[in-house]
Length: 137
Image (cartoon, rainbow, N blue to C red; front, side, top):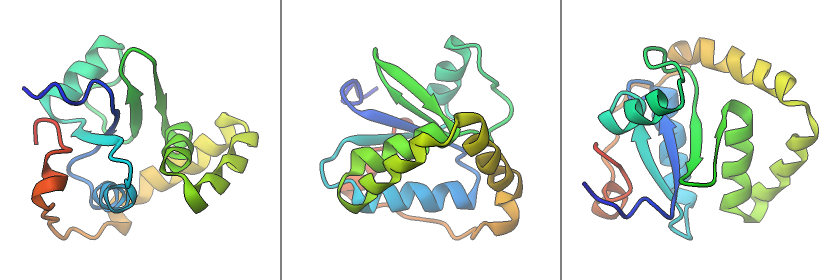
């Protein structure tokens, strides 16, 4: 297994969700500093991450952002951190941090609950460089 993910921010996502895959593509296109890697929650790597933290291993409606040996964030806090890390205009999203997590997570949960209805189920084919950013694809 590649170990080049140890110094990256790892985005865990539902690998079977079109909306989730759209956002992975969105991050990939904007990751100019090559700071993100990706793993589906269904993968062995994703399941290990969840199990080690006693997190839900059968429901995949939550996105996680993990910086190994530092932190992991869930739901809206993960989304806001990703935007800040991307920098530029996306740093404006930091203002969302003033909203209490329980409120912003409620919005996240509504979107998550309805994501399959919104999903575009096109199959995305990453470039060879982008493919290297996926752990256990």
